[in-house]
Amino acid sequence: MWTLIAEDAEKTQRFAEILGELAKPGDVLTLHGDLGAGKTTFTQGLARGLGVGQSVSSPTFTLIHEYEGRIPLYHIDVYRLGKHAAEEDLGYDEYFYGEGVTVVEWAELIEERLPDDYLSLTLEKNGEHRRTLHFVARGPRASEWVEEMMKRCRT
Image 1 (tube, rainbow, N blue to C red):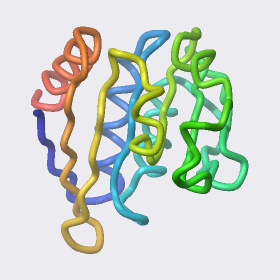
Image 2 (cartoon, one colour):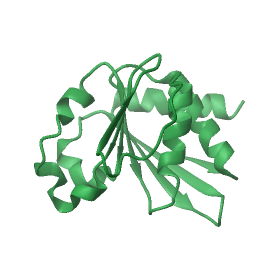
Image 3 (tube, rainbow, N blue to C red):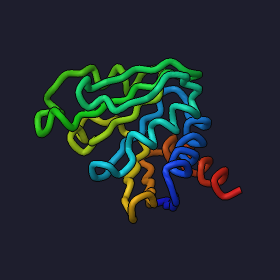
Image 4 (cartoon, one colour):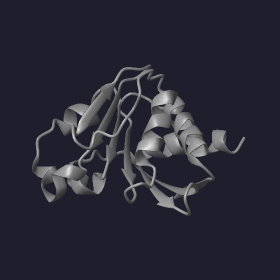
């Protein structure tokens, strides 16, 4: 597990931007945390690192937002589907094994549908603005991705 402390939303977005700059097609990031923990804030920074010029918002009511950048970004939020999320055929595999970077909020609801190699991030609120970011790599590419990010965040 790798851990970073972000003192404010700007720092959270900067860590995410670095991760986006290092992303490759097919990378999958799962986001975990309570409502208001910063999942969408993190995704906004990741999008900036991918060169997405559009405004990024939570896809809670639309389920999936797609953005064009250096690499396409697929932002999925399965919260609204609840316990039936894994049963829904939203084309998960097309996103997970496609040419973009896929971010999944509330991924624990579709855990059995996730690819074998993905990066998991849990955002923990420590006050109004401070966040603790816990990264867990689930595969060799995810390990490489987070290790490169950690090197850049520490320099």
